[in-house]
Image (cartoon, rainbow, N blue to C red; front, top):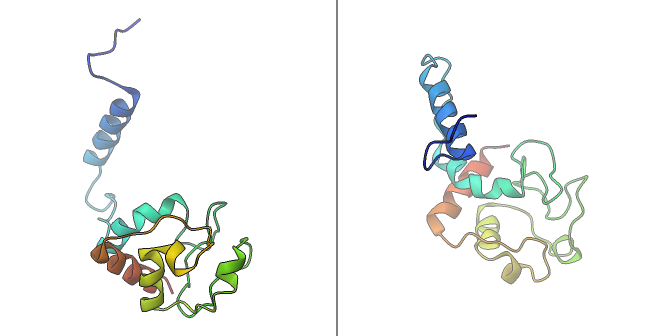
Length: 130
C-alpha cells in the first residue's frame, strides 16, 4: 500500500491530473479562455444554467432579455416574482441581481451580486445568450 505524500489530497491529485492533461493538449485542443462575462457568471451556475435547461434551484437564463419575469416554462417561480411585472432588460436585471430580495420581496433568489463591475459583466454575458 502506498503512503500518501505529505499534504496530498484527492482534490490535489485531481488538479494535478487535470493540469497534466491540459499541458498535453495541442493549442487546437485546449479549451478557449473564459470571457469576463463567463467568469463573472460562474457564481450564478450554482443555481442557474446558461443553456436551455432549467436547474432545480433556478431557471435557465438563456433568452432572458425581453422576457417577463416568472414566465420561463418548466420552472416554479415565487408568486411575488410572477406578479412583479418586470420585463428583463439591462437596468432591471442589474437592479435585481444587486439585491434580489429588496427589489422583489419574497423572491426565491436570495443571493445578490454587490459588485457593480461583476454585475455589468453578468448582464452583458446574459445579453449575448439571445
